[in-house]
Amino acid sequence: MAQLSPLLKQATPVVVDHGEGACLYDVEGRRHLDFTAGIGVTSTGHCHPKVVAAAREQIGKLIHGQYTTVMHRPLLELVERLGEVLPAGLDSLFFANSGSEAVEAALRLSRQATRRPNVIVFQGGFHGRTVAAATMTTSGTRFSAGFSPLMGGVHVAPFPYAYHYGWDEQTATRFALRELDYLFATVSAPGETAAFFVEPVLGEGGYVPANTEFLTGLRERADRHGILLVVDEIQTGFGRTGKYWGHRHFGVHPDVVLIAKGLASGFPLSGIAASAELMAKAFPGSQGGTYGGNAVSCAAALATLDVIEEEDLVANAAARGGQLLEGARLIGDKTPEIGDVRGLGLMVGSEFTTADGEPATALAQAAQQEAARRGLLMLTCGAYSNVVRMIPPLVVTAEQVDEALGLWSETVAAVTGNPTS
Image (cartoon, rainbow, N blue to C red; front, side, top):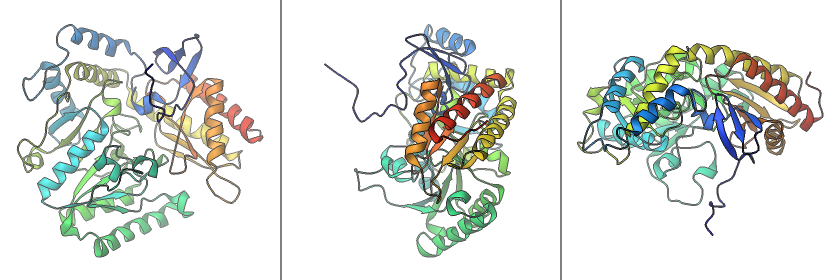
């Protein structure tokens, strides 16, 4: 009898029957608040009626039209619509299926366009599981262990993760930029460096936001040395951080943006956006793929963009994210085992540590499991899996945030023995 691979580790025991908005309902009819959103994918919630209707209509017309063979209207319309929300000048798009594919496409573009071999990534970043993307991922060894040798030409610089270093944010930022300059002098000369790849908020790395000084420092060095600034908005894009793009919090302009996850509300679709001038510098025929720009996924993405605009979900993410972060911090302030609570918009992480500041992985995992038993689904992240992260869909309501915070307070009290209210 066939079965799923035993290497797939389930975060919760829930077997889902159906979903609606910010909730999942299991096969026994029990309701669960879904603060995982499919790892940040179901931006408009589960089965938004407008997204469902768009997908159903498209399925009856055309399911797959391979886009280096034929064009179809959902793809062409999506290109036009994305042009209205992408950063200025990023007017050329390539579509794929997954975040890893988008990362690899941007890597290929960066190297071909600059004719330089190296890229620099930042400690704690997650960019995917395929060979090149896993080489560029430093959020945990579990994503790259056991299938070396990995790809060459990838070098790692520090990210300003202030809590990890035990410093204030300014000190951590100046250290990160100074070490980047040292890397230029010792490992990858600027003239050999094609691109920086950076997340506006570390995702798998622990929900650590970047800051203006750090990203401005990257932009300045990129401009000075002819290096491309590639911003990985796969998890932070389409309103999740309370602005349409995560990098907009920090006043920088990228050369390339990576998109996926929240773009199509659960249908597989990813891509990269750059200027037409930059795209033209890569090799002809170097972009392609069988399923990229799938017609049904594009139709769902168009409906997703409509819903984000019509329901003002970016503003909702900002408001509900502020509510969620404030509530989580109040719980953390009463809990010695929670060393730090941080986030941006609807990305909120609580980091569990021991009395001497070491990662409390078992406690974080116990909290995540206890919350699931109580009907609140969340995930862990961070290099030591000691950060419990909340990623509700952008349609989450104030009442649902309050409910989740109540469940989280009960959970934390249960696993630590400390009252939180």
